[in-house]
Every structure is written in C-alpha cells, then in structure tokens.
Length: 62
Image (tube, rainbow, N blue to C red; front, side, top):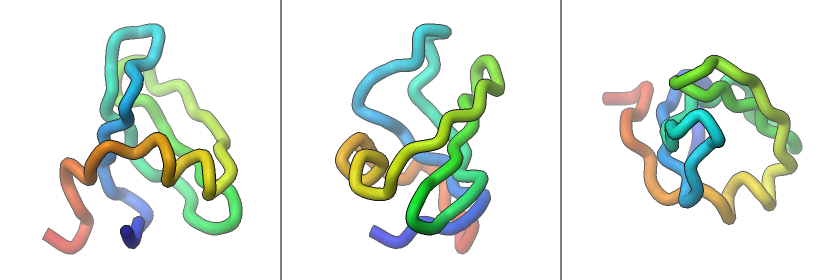
C-alpha cells in the first residue's frame, strides 16, 4: 500500500474515543496520524502502522 499525506485510513482497532478513522499527517520511517474523532496525534513506526491499517477510506488521489 502507498500512503500519502492527507489520506484517511481505517485502523483495525478503535481509538478510546470510539473513532477508527485517522488522517495521515506525515509519511516516512515514522508515520504521524491524527484521530478524526478527538484530533489526538500519534507517532507510529512504519511497520506497526502498516500492520494496523485495515483499509484506505479516502485517498488524496481520488
């Protein structure tokens, strides 16, 4: 999967606020994602991020 800044992704587990959709804020060795429910930002290593992604809901290319 290719991820771009601005993509909306759905993760396998929900955030404690109840939302499972996140916006990709930074791409690279580490990913920064922002919860669309509470706007909390989280840094994840690429490997963990790719393992947790269920699907890309909205791509910036669409």
